[in-house]
Length: 530
Image (tube, rainbow, N blue to C red; front, side, top):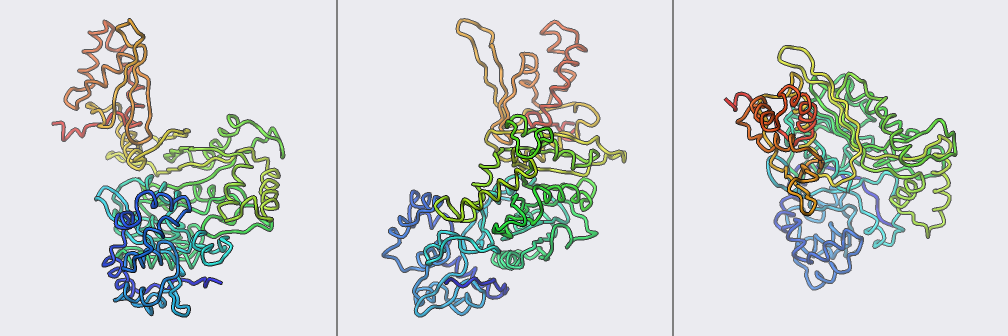
């Protein structure tokens, strides 16, 4: 039986451990070089025998610590002692990260390098978390995660990290911090960060990870939702909350890292209704979440099609957000109740081969059926207290609810620039515009014809949008170099197309607004333009 330990953060021991990990070069690239790129990719698929073959003859610190903390495998006590000269085996035991068993050191946690890229450059931290299913299975366990399991950096964590706007704030809040990765990332652009969680074990891991990273501007607090920060306000709130919709009152395992303890999508509703109370003027809240589509006309047990129900879920979410606030919601995908249930049952380590699978599936489907849930959406939510003009009057709120299925990159910058574009449009289209550097134009011709039948503007980053434009708008965008004013461009195009300037502007103006908000065109600072 594996010992299920809670980390015991200690600043001196963490500094010693970080020095040992650094001396062993326990980082992403050296590990990938040690066991090979193909084997490294296989680990993400739950296959580790190629890695073990590559390290079989090695007992150096990188190989020893790679097996112990990256793969979660017991290692000879003498090899671990040699690999951790500053921390020692006693030190990792005192930290609650491993323990002795005869002549072996058995891991109680994983410690994996996690690289990141932000506006300040490239870096890497060591992130400790609980043993994963693969490590537990190797240690003669069934692979089923305990209810208080603390997850490492997974897909959802990386997704949220890519969504968070790269903005400077005085105070930030990471609600539901888990292993602490979001708090660490936000701490690079915030004066101070408060990180909260309902799990004492998660907070212990998060504090330990901050110590390993040498980050000192994060405060850790225990509690549910916004209770630990009652009466406080922040410039940025980020959250990867336990949003998974799990049946209540049934014999279904609940995991602190993913299950919020409320019925249906009530936790996401509680967040979006409460978060604005904790934002300073101009402050933003960003989170990942699920929302249910419930069609009252069908009644419990009936099923509507995805195209009908997906919109219902987004409309429910919209109804939770005060119309005076900026709201930008991106629905990325939807799942049927069956697909959703299977996803999260498997996430807990139970597969269709296990006897418990069918009863768990029935509990999930019964829960959805009782509420008439026809589909579950997943996506990104951004809420902002509207910015205020220099005159003191607020900018009219942005209300944007959309579905985006294509690949998304640099979404955090896209959100930031979209909000900045919205603010810049408050008093009309800015006088000078510049084409964003990731925008390209594609023209499609019917064979034998000189004029293009289709003209498209395409984004290389952000939300990867493609917009069809006519020759007039394409011509306008093509000369947006930041030097010519929109008036000068409109007059020249009106003469070229032989139309009245006022009529052309009436046609172009609303579409230019959309291109600014979508990030195709960037307002030029008037001070810089001069």
